[in-house]
Amino acid sequence: MPYIKTVLILSFVCGFILHYFYEKKVLREKKQSDLLGSSILMGLISIFPGVIFYFMIYGGIFLWSADLSGPIENYSGALPGRILTNIYNLLFNLFGTYTNKICSIILFLIPPLSLWQYLKEHYNFE
Image 1 (tube, rainbow, N blue to C red):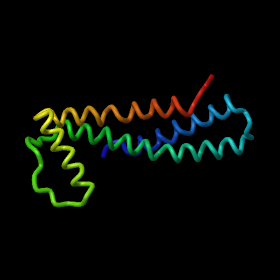
Image 2: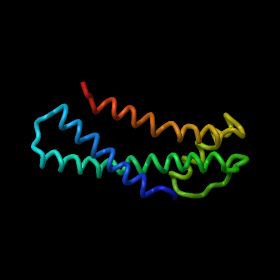
Image 3: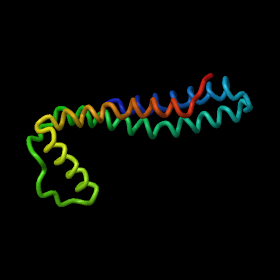
């Protein structure tokens, strides 16, 4: 998995900077030590969505080049695997051989759209 350390560091730094400047410029109610502590905590929390976004984008790149030429049959795994298999078979029945490309595009679009929605809901710099 290339660049995973870079993603972890950038997720922490972006979460820290965004929270720090939001608290400092907009709220202006905290002391410097409380501000740094809460910003560090927000930076650590922001690592989790960064890793999820990384795996979604990496999975999209992998899925784009995958060569699955038909529906998956006779899968005998656990329940989440069966659910994903059924979703893939449904998409394959709808879109045919373009299923991997469509799923890959969906995986590419989810991280930026969800990040935009999160920032729009939680931060107001007016």
